[in-house]
Length: 247
Ligand SMILES: NC(=O)c1ccc[n+]([C@@H]2O[C@H](COP(=O)([O-])OP(=O)(O)OC[C@H]3O[C@@H](n4cnc5c(N)ncnc54)[C@H](OP(=O)(O)O)[C@@H]3O)[C@@H](O)[C@H]2O)c1
Image 1 (cartoon, helix red, strand yellow):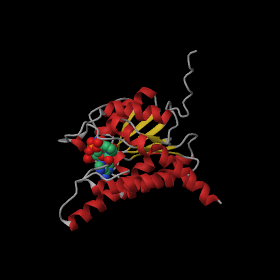
Image 2: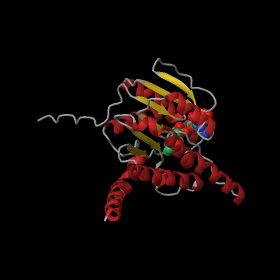
Image 3: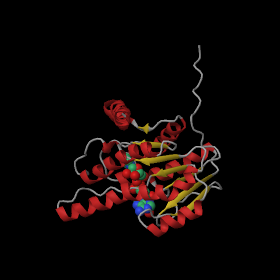
Image 4: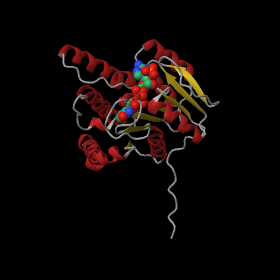
């Protein structure tokens, strides 16, 4: 007997979506792929220059998430918002000099933790007014174990992973999702010798995962191998801690 397809828990149709760092890489792939879902509007965030693609549903929005004034201006101009995708990121390889390494870690903690949290705060009134609010944080499979040469990056992504769990507790009415990609072919991995996932394929998997109502998405082969090691364990711990602390 054919199995009926499960009803998606979330519908991106007619939704207002903001993606940070949408001009290139995974952000651009998400932007292009969401168009297939007929959203109401995509606020495609860019820091310096908009991406090279145009669509009537795509609205380029200047947003440097490290700049408080830029965040305030973007938040004021966006108004209605259903889905926030915190995608902007950077990978600074580990520096040999300790002072340089501390400065790099600070920059990545800002970009991957403090800035997304500030953006969420700025957009909270809009998200809370939505009938189907969603926050999606682009984390990394490297949040679960440090990768040699990228220790600071992994630390900052581990912090974003913990913060995503925290957001779920603090905002039970908002669907908060962590995305944990493996190495993916974008500017970030230029020159890497690791097998790289295709950004457009990952974007398609991420978006179908969002519509299925997943809270953790492992969008490629390398990420799925990590999920098989830690995925259920993390979800179970999250539930157990909630029960423990509610007693
Ligand atoms: N590629 C991978 O293998 C991989 C794996 C796991 C997770 N991720 C995560 O996925 C996300 C996207 O990565 P990617 O591979 O697409 O990287 P990418 O190609 O290097 O693109 C990074 C994007 O982030 C934007 N950005 C950086 N700083 C910003 C700021 N202060 N304000 C606004 N935007 C800013 C960049 O804008 P500009 O063009 O202005 O620089 C660019 O659009 C990141 O969070 C990354 O950590 C990537």
